[in-house]
Image 1 (cartoon, helix red, strand yellow):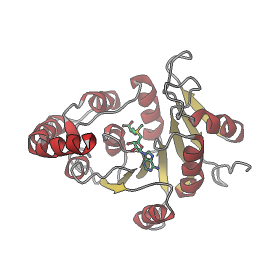
Image 2: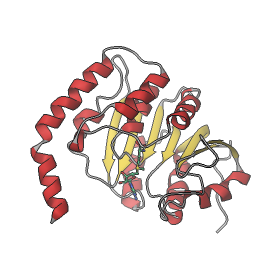
Image 3: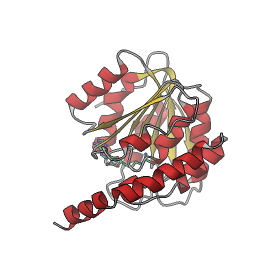
Image 4: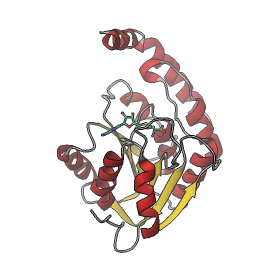
Length: 240
Ligand SMILES: C[S@@+](CC[C@H](N)C(=O)[O-])C[C@H]1O[C@@H](n2cnc3c(N)ncnc32)[C@H](O)[C@@H]1O
């Protein structure tokens, strides 16, 4: 009851929130930005309700990840876990052809804003897919969108349970090209929520592939990004 009232309130305030968000987008598009600036925009875009754009990342970590992704000259980026679109804003600046971003949440209101994230002159198309990444039907939708093309970069930042993140890795790694990257968010062991269990998967994957870690402070609680480079023969499969 309380959450449906909250959603109703957000829907009623939507036109006002949308006006502010598009004003911010216009400011963002008014000039071209270096990667640090784009990250800064993703952290501080602002806004309210369903039109609030933000990312829950540590700037130094997400900047290092963005630089690694940029070095791939990515055409296509796939993200699981759109949330408030902050990382989607960053990927939209880097991908030359496509960003496909997925979330459990329904994103009808966000669609007109997020699909306009790519900078002026970019040919990048942003596609928002709502649904459960663990459902076979949803994976088929992603495959249909890709139509046989491989992605350069897969960002796994959805279900953070050990079982969920492991399923996302196994289900979506096949879409990443050799030499491409798969990144996981929240890899540090000390986490604020017991359901943040990405470190279990990360510990098992580390010995099996070329990996790198971006952790701002070894004593931090939460966050941390791990990247894995996909080998010629594909990303490793974990023993059962
Ligand atoms: C930590 S947030 C993503 C943050 C975003 N990448 C950023 O940094 O700007 C995680 C998101 O994953 C979504 N999510 C959780 N489980 C999911 C699932 N099974 N399928 C798709 N999305 C899921 C949640 O709804 C949530 O919006």
